[in-house]
Image (tube, rainbow, N blue to C red; front, side, top):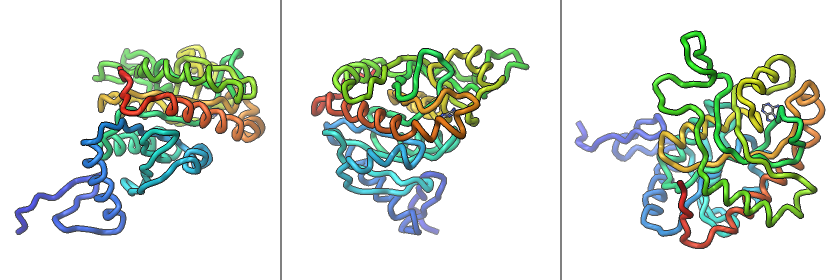
Length: 285
Ligand code: ADE
């Protein structure tokens, strides 16, 4: 029997010398992460749910290496002057949580940014506008029949996960510098409500609006936020609005405004990264 301990990474047990399929890239990714630990350069994790949302980031990135962990492809490299790990998580909270945990476990990230599009139930927030998170809640987490508040997660100290104020400030500063390239889009700061549902008006949209008063609704942010909080990693959810989470959203407005929203979210994140000085870890509280 081998005396060397097996490694458990992303749910796969690797015995000594094991190198099977995705496991090869997976081990390389881990080595890279350990090397990065000694670097003074901050490392930013960027999670996009969909391929379209990630495309401009991947295109702009100077990619160094990729690793596959839990079936997800993590690309390390530099983007807008900073070291980043970029990954597409897929749609929904489980995909987002698995991805965020893999990122926290295998890469020494200093901060996590979840970027993409969202709907809104607010009358004064419009398509193309940007929303940066104050906090993020799961609107479909419901143990109210046992006396918990809507969205409250039993046995956790918090369930409205608070974003990093340093990253929020950075996003606001970045917006001021690039708003002329944003087709008149406004910048909002508010709550993100996430759930495994595309919100398309009706009683569900009303209930989410009345219960949580979110600035934006989407399907991943709160799961990324929870994983970040459990790993003590500062995070920000940044979403550009594609639709009004109403009856027109699934068939009309979402597809129409998706490219505009993606362009705005990319422009803002790139400006944020550009604003961070070399070796500046902000004070990511
Ligand atoms: N992402 C973009 N629009 C959305 C909506 N209306 N509901 C959930 N996620 C979304």
